[in-house]
Length: 100
Image 1: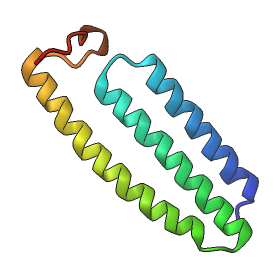
Image 2 (image 1 turned 90 degrees about the vertical axis):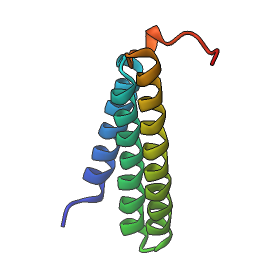
Image 3 (image 1 turned 60 degrees about the vertical axis):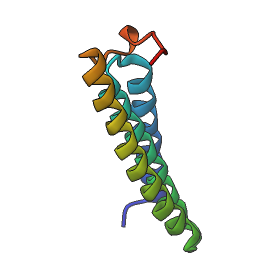
Image 4 (image 1 turned 180 degrees about the horizontal axis):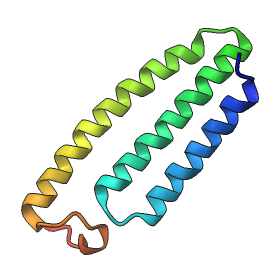
């Protein structure tokens, strides 16, 4: 069995990589993927603590987070497609206007 600390370290590493991806990337799609990576890092942490504490609450939280992540991805991709159709680009720095 894999030790608990490995799961927590993997979760922390994925969270840091996702955060760096959100900060550094200029493309909205890459930022959305980095956000999904951070949500998966939280899921790994919940499952790891669930295994450590022998409780089912972590798995319930993971189920809700996966549901929210799926909705966030669908809405985010819909917005990205709408922005691309209007501006012909998905670069964050070029999207400065808020008027419709």
